[in-house]
Image (cartoon, rainbow, N blue to C red; front, side, top):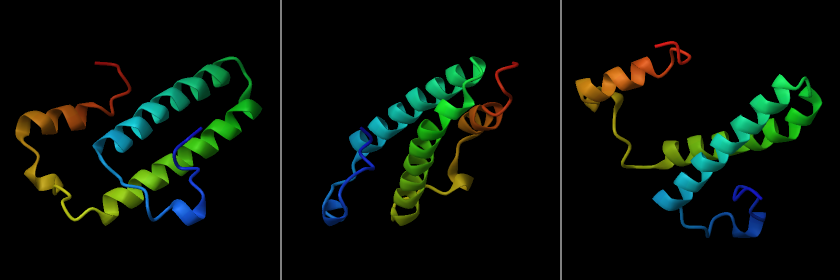
Length: 94
């Protein structure tokens, strides 16, 4: 079960650290693979629950990123990393 499904009374008490964020990213990776597999099989209806969890996770991660005081501005990305970021959206055709 996703860690985003924390009861409301406990939501403010959870510590968000790099391990928690990595677990969510790993979970999102698995969710995307499941969604893609179901879509390839023509079973779009089954994708909905996974899409809802993925959406919830992404919103949670975005909220954490927005609230984080130590965000690194995009302008501080080194040129070598910038190429990787820009090239990552090419759909794997490179």
